[in-house]
Image (cartoon, rainbow, N blue to C red):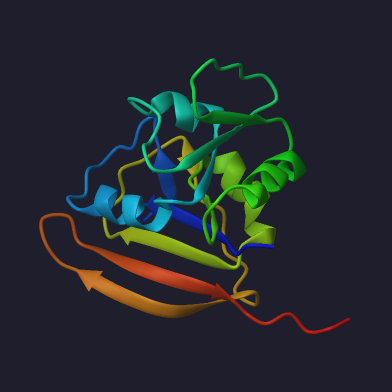
Amino acid sequence: MKPIVLIAAMDAGRAIGRGNDIPWHIPGEQKVFRELTMGNALIIGRMTYLSLPRPLPGRYCIVLSRSFVSQTAGVLLATSLNEALSLASELPGSEITVGGGQEIYKLFLPLANRIHLTVLDATFGGDRFFPLLPEDEFSIAASERVEGPLPYTRFIYERRSRLPS
Protein backbone atom coordinates (compact mmCIF):
# COMPACT_ATOMS: atom_id res chain seq x y z
CA MET A 1 0.00 0.00 0.00
CA LYS A 2 1.09 3.58 -0.63
CA PRO A 3 2.36 5.55 2.37
CA ILE A 4 -0.37 7.42 4.27
CA VAL A 5 0.62 11.01 5.07
CA LEU A 6 -1.32 13.34 7.38
CA ILE A 7 -0.93 17.07 6.73
CA ALA A 8 -2.13 19.55 9.35
CA ALA A 9 -1.56 22.87 11.08
CA MET A 10 -2.58 23.47 14.67
CA ASP A 11 -2.27 26.21 17.25
CA ALA A 12 -0.49 25.83 20.60
CA GLY A 13 -3.73 24.44 22.06
CA ARG A 14 -4.01 21.76 19.33
CA ALA A 15 -6.90 23.60 17.58
CA ILE A 16 -7.11 23.01 13.82
CA GLY A 17 -10.35 24.84 13.15
CA ARG A 18 -13.17 26.97 14.46
CA GLY A 19 -16.61 27.26 12.91
CA ASN A 20 -15.58 25.27 9.81
CA ASP A 21 -12.71 27.63 9.08
CA ILE A 22 -9.04 27.98 9.99
CA PRO A 23 -8.72 30.81 12.55
CA TRP A 24 -5.33 32.03 11.26
CA HIS A 25 -3.53 32.69 8.00
CA ILE A 26 0.10 31.69 7.55
CA PRO A 27 1.66 33.11 4.38
CA GLY A 28 3.12 30.28 2.32
CA GLU A 29 1.41 27.46 4.22
CA GLN A 30 -1.13 26.84 1.44
CA LYS A 31 1.78 26.50 -0.98
CA VAL A 32 3.35 23.82 1.24
CA PHE A 33 0.01 21.99 1.44
CA ARG A 34 -0.34 22.17 -2.35
CA GLU A 35 3.20 20.80 -2.88
CA LEU A 36 2.62 17.90 -0.45
CA THR A 37 -0.72 16.89 -1.95
CA MET A 38 -0.27 17.64 -5.66
CA GLY A 39 -0.76 14.58 -7.87
CA ASN A 40 -1.87 12.40 -4.96
CA ALA A 41 -5.17 11.20 -3.57
CA LEU A 42 -6.35 13.63 -0.88
CA ILE A 43 -8.81 12.26 1.66
CA ILE A 44 -10.85 14.84 3.56
CA GLY A 45 -14.08 14.90 5.51
CA ARG A 46 -17.34 16.50 4.43
CA MET A 47 -16.95 19.68 6.51
CA THR A 48 -13.39 20.23 5.29
CA TYR A 49 -14.54 19.75 1.71
CA LEU A 50 -17.43 22.21 2.16
CA SER A 51 -15.02 24.81 3.59
CA LEU A 52 -13.07 24.85 0.30
CA PRO A 53 -13.93 27.48 -2.30
CA ARG A 54 -13.76 24.81 -5.03
CA PRO A 55 -12.33 21.32 -5.56
CA LEU A 56 -8.54 21.47 -5.33
CA PRO A 57 -6.97 21.18 -8.79
CA GLY A 58 -4.24 18.63 -9.45
CA ARG A 59 -5.37 16.29 -6.68
CA TYR A 60 -7.73 13.35 -6.57
CA CYS A 61 -10.20 14.42 -3.89
CA ILE A 62 -11.94 11.73 -1.87
CA VAL A 63 -14.59 12.96 0.56
CA LEU A 64 -15.14 10.53 3.43
CA SER A 65 -18.66 10.89 4.78
CA ARG A 66 -21.62 8.70 5.64
CA SER A 67 -24.13 11.28 4.40
CA PHE A 68 -22.54 13.55 1.77
CA VAL A 69 -23.74 13.59 -1.83
CA SER A 70 -21.90 15.52 -4.54
CA GLN A 71 -22.34 15.95 -8.26
CA THR A 72 -18.96 17.68 -8.64
CA ALA A 73 -16.79 16.18 -11.35
CA GLY A 74 -13.52 14.78 -10.06
CA VAL A 75 -14.72 14.39 -6.47
CA LEU A 76 -15.01 10.81 -5.27
CA LEU A 77 -17.12 9.78 -2.31
CA ALA A 78 -16.36 7.11 0.27
CA THR A 79 -18.52 6.01 3.19
CA SER A 80 -15.82 4.13 5.13
CA LEU A 81 -12.11 4.18 5.83
CA ASN A 82 -11.63 0.97 3.82
CA GLU A 83 -13.53 2.37 0.84
CA ALA A 84 -11.47 5.60 0.95
CA LEU A 85 -8.21 3.60 1.08
CA SER A 86 -9.34 1.34 -1.75
CA LEU A 87 -10.21 4.32 -3.97
CA ALA A 88 -6.97 6.13 -3.08
CA SER A 89 -4.80 3.09 -3.78
CA GLU A 90 -6.21 2.82 -7.31
CA LEU A 91 -5.49 6.47 -8.17
CA PRO A 92 -2.19 7.85 -9.51
CA GLY A 93 0.31 9.30 -7.05
CA SER A 94 2.97 7.96 -4.76
CA GLU A 95 1.20 8.71 -1.45
CA ILE A 96 -2.24 8.87 0.09
CA THR A 97 -2.57 12.28 1.74
CA VAL A 98 -5.05 13.15 4.48
CA GLY A 99 -6.13 16.75 5.00
CA GLY A 100 -8.62 16.67 7.86
CA GLY A 101 -10.70 17.42 9.76
CA GLN A 102 -10.65 16.24 13.33
CA GLU A 103 -12.46 12.92 12.91
CA ILE A 104 -10.60 12.07 9.69
CA TYR A 105 -7.22 12.68 11.37
CA LYS A 106 -8.28 10.52 14.32
CA LEU A 107 -9.40 7.75 11.97
CA PHE A 108 -6.19 7.72 9.89
CA LEU A 109 -3.62 8.37 12.66
CA PRO A 110 -3.18 4.63 13.47
CA LEU A 111 -2.38 4.02 9.78
CA ALA A 112 -0.16 7.04 9.14
CA ASN A 113 3.42 6.53 8.01
CA ARG A 114 4.30 10.24 8.14
CA ILE A 115 2.82 13.44 9.54
CA HIS A 116 3.58 16.96 8.33
CA LEU A 117 2.48 19.10 11.28
CA THR A 118 2.79 22.88 11.54
CA VAL A 119 2.56 24.05 15.17
CA LEU A 120 1.89 27.73 15.81
CA ASP A 121 3.27 29.39 18.93
CA ALA A 122 0.00 31.24 19.61
CA THR A 123 -3.39 29.95 20.71
CA PHE A 124 -6.40 30.96 18.63
CA GLY A 125 -9.03 28.73 20.18
CA GLY A 126 -11.15 26.38 18.21
CA ASP A 127 -13.77 23.68 18.17
CA ARG A 128 -11.79 21.09 16.19
CA PHE A 129 -8.49 19.61 17.38
CA PHE A 130 -5.60 17.49 16.12
CA PRO A 131 -5.27 14.19 18.01
CA LEU A 132 -2.40 13.55 20.41
CA LEU A 133 0.48 11.73 18.76
CA PRO A 134 1.48 8.52 20.52
CA GLU A 135 5.10 9.30 21.50
CA ASP A 136 6.09 5.65 21.33
CA GLU A 137 4.85 5.38 17.73
CA PHE A 138 6.23 8.55 16.10
CA SER A 139 9.53 10.40 16.18
CA ILE A 140 10.54 13.76 14.76
CA ALA A 141 12.44 13.21 11.51
CA ALA A 142 12.88 16.92 10.72
CA SER A 143 11.81 20.33 11.93
CA GLU A 144 12.02 23.87 10.66
CA ARG A 145 11.51 26.99 12.77
CA VAL A 146 9.85 29.92 10.99
CA GLU A 147 9.95 33.35 12.63
CA GLY A 148 7.74 36.28 11.70
CA PRO A 149 4.53 37.96 12.79
CA LEU A 150 3.05 34.51 13.42
CA PRO A 151 5.98 32.24 14.43
CA TYR A 152 5.63 28.49 14.07
CA THR A 153 7.56 25.26 13.72
CA ARG A 154 7.01 22.79 10.92
CA PHE A 155 7.59 19.18 12.00
CA ILE A 156 7.84 15.97 10.02
CA TYR A 157 7.05 12.92 12.11
CA GLU A 158 7.84 9.42 10.92
CA ARG A 159 6.30 6.27 12.32
CA ARG A 160 8.78 4.24 14.28
CA SER A 161 9.41 0.76 12.91
CA ARG A 162 6.85 -1.71 14.07
CA LEU A 163 8.31 -4.77 15.69
CA PRO A 164 7.12 -8.11 14.35
CA SER A 165 4.62 -9.76 16.67
